[in-house]
Image 1 (cartoon, rainbow, N blue to C red):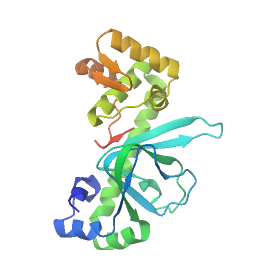
Image 2 (cartoon, helix red, strand yellow):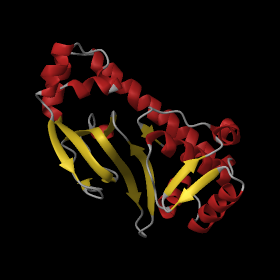
Image 3 (cartoon, helix red, strand yellow):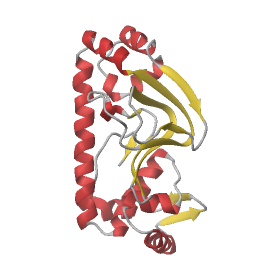
Image 4 (cartoon, one colour):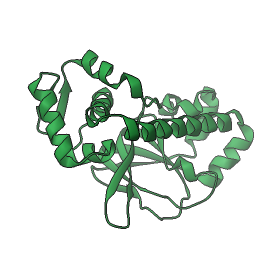
Length: 224
């Protein structure tokens, strides 16, 4: 399966190894807004995003939602439960029509016995995401709503994705009113152009300067 070479966690695998791994992958075509798994459901493996995009969402007991991350092509979903055999602590849903692969835990562990370098790639991936979430936590404490929204706008522009105002607010940790007001200000100053859900970046350098103090580095396929 040629697409597997686009996943950083499989970067050390040779073509024959990727072919063996491809034999373990079940691929499914999902429509927009379809669930991959529910919060609290048992985790039996992990998912690979070949095309499209998936959001991982945590819901509170009071019904409030928080988008934890968005995963585009070349990214993983549900991988945090791979080694602890726990339950999914959030739910995953497609944003747009997507091609998703699934690898069952037992099959993958058997594969890892023969290709141990991939284990270190997985730990590298999880470590990188952990640092990204730590940086985002700091961003919540110190960065303004404009800085947080600007970072998301640039990331969404990179992956050519669209979110509703409510979803943008969820990811940035601001109210919907604040998100709408801030987007209006950026549009009126000619920094972005807004057409329904589509936000086009007109002055990328301005947004990059704005977010400089609090970047949240992660895999290019992931928005955190």
